[in-house]
Amino acid sequence: MKRLVTIGATIALFSAPVVGVAAGSASASPRSAARVSRAVATHTATVRLAGTVNASALPRFTGAGHQAFRLPLRRAPQSAARGVRGPAAAASASSAQGPLVTVTPGTPLAGTLGDGDNITTGPGELTPPDMGFSTNGTKEIELINDVGKIWNGTTPGTAFSLATFFSPSAPSDFLSDPFVKWDVGSGRFFAGIFDVSLGGEIMAVSTTSDPSGTWNLYRVRYPSTTVTGGGCPDQGKAGVDSNVVGLGFNEFAATGVGGCPNTATFRGAAIEVFNKAEMMAGATVHFVYTDPQSGYFSLVPADTQGSSTTEFFASLDYGTSTQLHQVTSVGVPLGGPTDVTLTVLPDLTVKSYSNPPKAPQSGTTKKIDSGDDRTQNVSMSGTKLSLAATVGCKPKGDTAKRACGRVYEVDDTSTAAPLLKKSLTISAVGKYFIYPAATILGTNTVAVSIGQSSSSTFGSLYTTAGTWGLALAGPVQVQAGTAKNTTGRYGDYFAVAVQPGTTNQYWVAGEIGGTSGSTFKWNTAAGVVTVS
Image 1 (tube, rainbow, N blue to C red):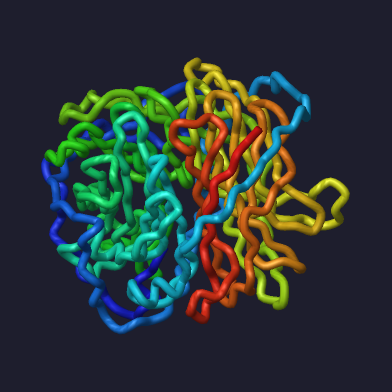
Image 2: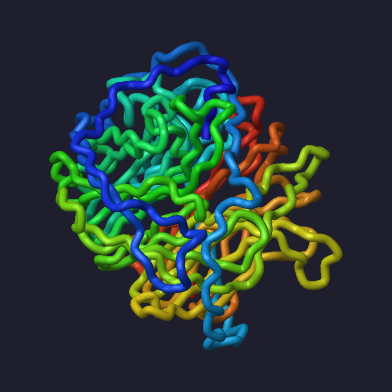
């Protein structure tokens, strides 16, 4: 995300777009909760339609002169985000390693965005890209930093400014961390971006299945009264189920001051749950939200494959731990204090995880930031849940700790006793695997988008997949990087998306090293992958 301090300017807060806020019951700390399911206190609010925008007719960005920013990764204190230790997970139902699936990448998508597009279309050089990518099966859309692009099949369109897309009424707002999701059930795209100036998230939903058409916009300042002006609700991530749109973010805030100043400290993870039908209709949207939950870090909502009326949120602790946390959301916000129930499930004990080391890259002693072991993404299909993160591990046969991908597979999420099906580690001797994103294909395959770097390679895009409960295939390169990253900042997240209408194809997207007309030396890559 972007911080105010990087440009040395004060950003004025806009008038709050959230109205009708009502408090729920007092919140309980996850640190003091019993090892049983419990409710999380919520508050109700509404947000009005801010306007509509046509993605095919956007004006050119005409902001201030171009500058170069390294965007910091805001982290929790080592002692923060410790949920209540839950019961040990049930033993894995399968320890088999095969048979392995075959993973076959197609031709990488032409015209993917790079930092040069931030210069020509956006406010200037930025790093890292913060990848958003999705598809409806015929058109693809990529969002990075402050720039977007739409493809018709494999034919790229013209890059457009996210300032004029998300914030046409205030294009100089400080934006960061975009995402975009395709929802099969409704046939709509859902997108969002963190607006530091607003103190919240700008949410967008396409009015048809065509991302090149019109979108409804909602400017949602985080309404918690525990912070000023929304504070700094960082790295929002969304999930969509049959009835709601879930948003999870990490709240950093400074006492009595809005935005993201140096003095902002971690307050906890927070959740917002929006009425999906109202958002699609362009109506005033009812939603519920939590105050910051100090015992959690990066509570990420699930991408739901298929239909479901329960939205799952899941997270890991920050730093060394063995706990996986889950929260469920049931109900649709309509303005009542009991419309939506958020429930904390007992923790699962999983294979130990810890923060990863930085990753070397070819041609330089400058290492790239592997991030931390926060939850990168969560996916749901039926009663199956996958969670992906970057962790530290020592690959088999290696002599040193590396950055590794980790995917946890959880079964029986519809019951009070979910089962840890499998802990999968993506690693290789001398290699560093970073920023995994996992999704579930059909009902029985997990597919992963992931970055890879080493002392002999530039940052590159890789993929792997496997049958649920069995081992993953060896990582396969989708597109190689071509240059060293000059800043050390990388990620902060990759993307993965199911190819609609299939059960064996998916898209992967993420950062690679490359020359794109900027001094930061990064590009992005995307490609479709087939599993057999």
